[in-house]
Length: 197
Image 1 (cartoon, rainbow, N blue to C red):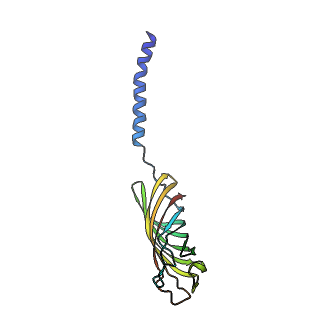
Image 2 (cartoon, one colour; image 1 turned 90 degrees about the vertical axis):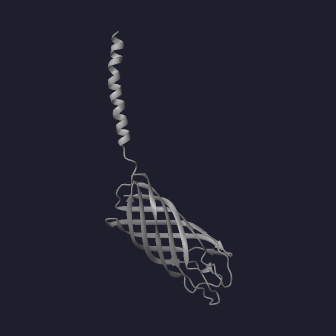
Image 3 (cartoon, rainbow, N blue to C red; image 1 turned 180 degrees about the horizontal axis):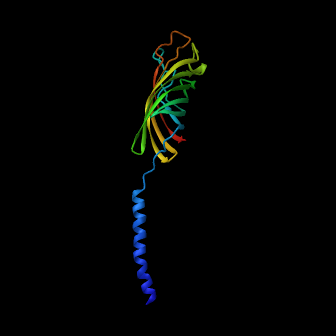
């Protein structure tokens, strides 16, 4: 009889404990990105074209693959300074394509619920290997501009998955003036991990 009474006395306590746990679970906030002072990004990069694709003489186009890395430091209320470097690799018309791009500029970030969206405009330069075009290059360096944005989805308070799309402008001239119509506008898509501090 005493055992039965003891078990009956435990029921209200168990009910109260279960109710408290359920309320705590329901009130738990979804994973969000902690307000960062700095970010480091590293990921894969897809470049929509080769730099020796020309209209005269006709040369086909091949997409390039590579890496993308960026460092971002917050300045003031969503505005931050960004430095980005990406490199692409591939072969087109039997010529290796290895552009390396270094950029810097402002970025604006805005929180949408648990996700973060951003836009940026960057400027810098591109280095291209000398044998990317059969006749050689007038210069291995060219101005580079990038505009675009993306979204970060948090995986933990200090790690997020980034998806980004950009338009890149850079233009090289062949040492042979008969080669015309080299491309200057490219699309770049990148995805990887963001680490916030």
